[in-house]
Length: 443
Ligand code: NDP
Image 1 (cartoon, protein in one colour):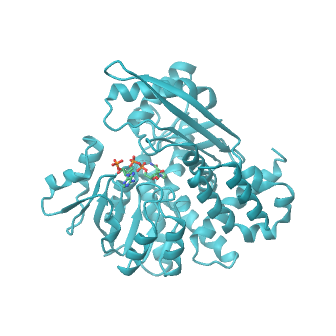
Image 2: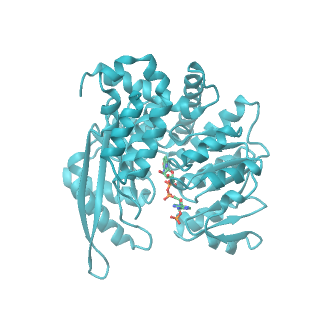
Image 3: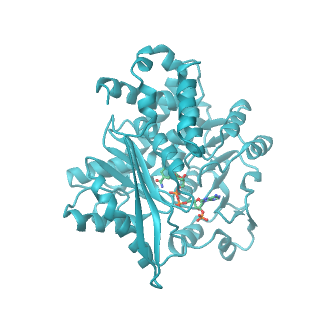
């Protein structure tokens, strides 16, 4: 039995019912096998065993009272996975599907993503099974304050700096920051994704989506191609999806379909992003309302966005939203590039199918790293007590995405997997963390 097989067997035995976590570790560990073969000292020092076990996991009760006076209890999580290369950094997700396995998969992926950015940030993740949908602002505030009443003990500008993710945008970060400040008396960059009037960074909101398109654009460049004239599908209609669609459109592509968890819209003329922003960012409404803005567009209930013919697909909604059947449809329809804006939106089988059938594929940990990279730029601005212009941040983001692309491409090439960004991103992300862990001794 190989080292990787042994570690994976142990992970499966110790973590029943954590499917997403097992999926993520399986993908990463198999793809770094060539590095492990070249570095026997990693096995001798139980590096994989240490890397796959989080430094600590905090699980806590989050009680809060709704507008009718009824008390609810949610479960809060913070997984502080690995701080070998810097303070823990990773988002907070508020969604009813949140459980320990999902928190661990996201935290584990975050280690490599953060390493790939080239910035000094360790990996972690957190959140709760609280559903912000349909809640009043006061209810969301009550939840966020209660969540922070426990979390504040475990975080800090040099310890662990949470950010947004699904269900956590500027409103939630504001409530969380306010409560942290009240509890600790500290005005520090303990959260990123803050509002611009209290330490937030320009271009943070746009960063993940823009970064995704910068990365995909580099992939196209390798093949002497560009976004100009391409037909694009973007799943989701949240923070990542909206700004991916915006940048793809600025680069000359036509985005024809977007979705939310209820259904999807197809607009042959190209999605009207001002309408999507108003529905999602202002009204917090449903994507079907798009027809009020563009009656000529189509709306379909349920899953099905991947049946739309496209050159480029950007899954930007959630994990495992693109399965084997979807991959087959995309290939049959002539799709040439899939870049993940969400975390692990493509199942393992779908990823393999896409790669085997000549689709240029970018994993989320490389392609969506622009968000966390810009969060790290927000941390730098907070420490220096200054703020950079939109253009400065955007240009740093662009350079970082080019750098991640180059590193992933070169790492894959060095190990004989040229063009395989899954292997390249995992190897490049892993090597830096592994070296730091080895240098710091058994800890
Ligand atoms: P948002 O909450 O802003 O948006 C999520 C979008 O995905 C919503 O439109 C939501 O629809 C949709 N969605 C959720 N579940 C499903 C589903 N099962 N089927 C179809 N659509 C669905 O989150 P973000 O845009 O911030 O995050 C999206 C993804 O990107 C996540 O995987 C996140 O981890 C990842 N990511 C985010 C970063 C960031 O900076 N925000 C950074 C890196 C990765 P509905 O409104 O109906 O729920």
